[in-house]
Image (cartoon, rainbow, N blue to C red; front, side, top):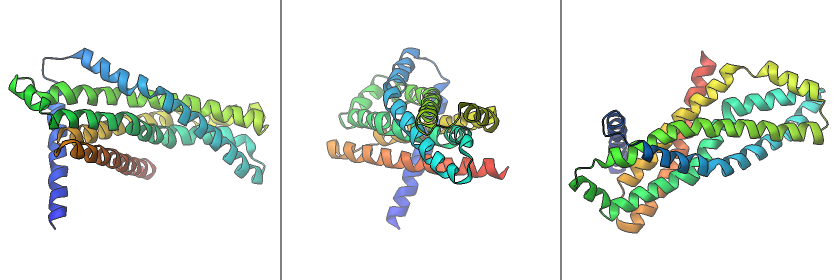
Length: 250
């Protein structure tokens, strides 16, 4: 019972923390250079891992799709099915998970270290709101960079699928491209980008909260970072299910 109460209190604290971050995002002073710094860290710093993951995911999807479609002599549909799966599901989810492991853990560790070394308390004493200075730039950067990284995943994933489908599985180019144009519409890409924006919000809020509320010295920072990554990953999957259920249901 106590553990449930503690979990509910922690969740409630995180919700209030998120609302406070949103409120401070619209109040001066605005610090665009902090947002650009976080965009470089979250976005540019994650391009490599996202690109590698996207390329190999597309290659595997193409090979597995070709194996399945060959049973029905429908290899030409591989391109469209891979593009659709990437755009609506795999690109936003895998991108969010990769960025959580790389950037989200670093955010939680950085803020947690600042908390246990009393740097955040020092900012309060200097009349600098730590949520506006530390949290808001990271949240805004995540909202902007997650969709951009998702598009990188989409492009490189489809390129990997194209290489495997055309040059390894020997699927004709015409059906591969044509079925991609038939299967994939703008709404599918928009659906994936909407997921990416919400995943960015979820990851930024959870990782910032875990770091901001860390206690117990270096051990507490490590535990907070672990909880941040696990909670963010679960949050991504839960939000993904809810959005998919809603979109399919409507």
